[in-house]
Structures are given as C-alpha cells and as structure tokens.
Length: 359
Image 1 (tube, rainbow, N blue to C red):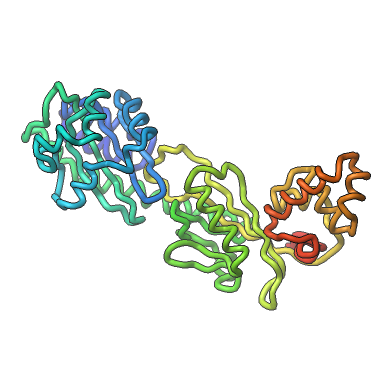
Image 2: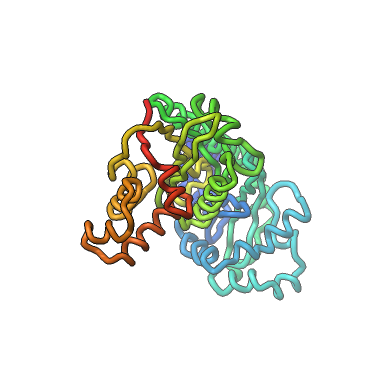
C-alpha cells in the first residue's frame, strides 16, 4: 500500500463523506479482511457506513438487535486499551466460543475483528471495526501494527467530518434568520447545537437550552416536544411536529415546529437531526383553513373543523355543513386537539382564536 496516498484518501473522505465507503474498501484490502465499517453509537441511535462487501452483514447485524448486545464494545470500553485491539486482546478462546454475538458473526461469514474506539465531541462513541471470516483466522500482529500507524489520521478525519457537520448546522440556522425565522439545530439527543440570534432572544421565556435536551416553557408544550423528540429518535416521526405555545405576559402566542433533517441514515458524522423553528403569531380575524393547516400540520378536513369550532359552530353544525357524520367530526376534532396540544373546545378557541403570522 502507498501509505502517503492512503493518508490523502483519509482526509479526502473527511471533506467528502460519500468517499468513506471507498476508504473502508482500502482498509479491507490492507488487512486482508472480509470488510470494514465505521459507526457512531449513542443510547438512542446507531449510524454507520461500511465497505461494500460487508454491508449486507452489518445491516443484518443491526436489524437483529446485536448492537445493543455488542460484547466487543463492552469489553473494549472496560479494558480501555489504546489503539487497534483484536478479539484476542478482549476474550479468551473459551469466551469467544461461548459468546452468542461472535457465534452469530461466525454463522454469517465473520468472526474475527480488530478495531478502535474514539469518543466524539458530541459524546457519541465512534468505532472503526475490520472483520475477517472465522475460517481466515485472526489478525496478525504486523497487520494491526500497520493499521495503528493510520489511527491518528482516521481520528483526525473523523473529528474534521464532525466539525464540518456542525458548521453546516450553524450556517443553516443563520440562513433561516435571514428570512425572519427564529430557529435552532438539534442533535440526535435533542440538545441545541446551534441557534440564530432570533431564537436566542427567546431564551429563556420561550425556549430553554438545557444540558440534556432543549425545552419549551410550560409543562404542556414541553411534554409534547419531549414526545416528538422521542419519536424522532425512534425514527417514528417522519413529518413535522407543531406545538402551540399559549400567550403569556412575556410573549404572544406562538407555534414551535420540529422539522426532521432529511439526510442519509448512514451519515455517520452528521450532527444535525432536526430544526426547531418558532413562528410568532398575533391576534386578528379568524384565520383561514390553509393557515391552520400550515401552522399545525392539520389535514384539510381537520383544518375545516378547527376553523368551524373557532367560529362558534358545534360538531353537529359542522357535520351538516360538511356532509359527514357527527362521529367523523368528533374524530377529526380529537386529532386537532392532539396536534395542537389541548383537550377541550374552549381551550382550542382560546389558543387559536385569531392567529395570523407576524412579520
């Protein structure tokens, strides 16, 4: 291997994330292995990228839930060994033969590994892992020694990729300020990693920048935000979540929008997981259905029901006007309550009555 050329490819991948699979292909060839992979792990997610040959194995490994029972990572963290380590450093032969995860890997074409752990600034654990088939045998000391010479460059490239991801997040928040939107960027754990001046000015009366996660002022809105963040972490929230913020003596009524960042699920170094945007509102005439639909992610039918309730109509009135059953209207109204964050018609009218976007 041309060491200088390979180091160049490491830093090229740091700047162009799409090149990481090519880089990992090169590591695989250097180690005479089945495949190489890189993944970041946190309590709520695992993102990964791999060389092409091992991609199906890694996908099955994650889908079958083995990441949560990864004894290699557990052992490596406990032993706290520097540099590239191998299975022989972490297990006795008897332990390997008894380990269910290693048995699974052997059955699926793997079984021997060498790897290294790196703690990222976000707190996530970054793992470089190179896998060989059990039949091929363990990694030789000289192979591990060659890989160890590359470890500082892999570490720096990973940190550079993470830093670039953060800078992209900060630039996105600034761009939203240019069109008048108070906004921040949230990490995978829900922490605020970047915020524009418009959102910062709303702290702490509207938004609270806490150590564990961003919060909204008020127990009811914050409970909705926590639920949305939990669903996003579990990949159960494919759409925008909108949360009504009642007016207080400190601020007018507002709507907070949690917008997932659309990205490749295997973007290992992406720090942004969602945007938090706040839309201030002010009193005016009863808003149209389209405005309610946009602010709170209502369906067209739900927006018509919400508008009708705000105009003083009953579910029976709306059923006759819309040509549907009263039960249908009540079902749609229940969905409106859930999306807006209230439980009674009176609260809905008080909260939404006369909303219009301010400039």
